[in-house]
Length: 237
Picture (cartoon, one colour):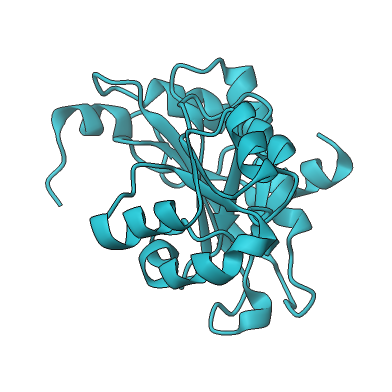
């Protein structure tokens, strides 16, 4: 793959044979963010799971202590008093059958996360083929099917994000922006790793976390010493 000048300059800052500790990796990822826009800082965690087995899927959520650095649009499927609660709590879009129709027939997808009250899921399930592949389908396991809408919306707006392992057993997640202070990125990184560790499936045997790397949107990957980092996190940084 042909790389641009900025990428090559950023790549020179990294020793590809080295595994960095958490602080070094965060410091480097800021230095390698050389694009003209505020790049997103992303983490990739390779897990020792069998992604073909349903009982080894990793899916949960985490509240980033310093937020994501971007505004999140929340859509809520609810009716009656729950619809009013969602509106009062700052949801961007609220509705029931009308909202389902808007998505199903008009392709409306201008939102980042969808919540639903349990009583709406029978109707919302019709959107599985549309929302599922995009990671937008409400799911009880991720806390997006709930009657506690006020709590859920406030958490999402303040930095709650979902994560799940892909078909290769890797979790990809944004942990902030390149203009965040190092301390803020480090705190978000710690929270994400702690959440992934806590989400280890009971049926998963052997080494659970096999690799960690972080990168800016347009920058090269920075490999983290996952063994010592996980040990530190388990001991309480």
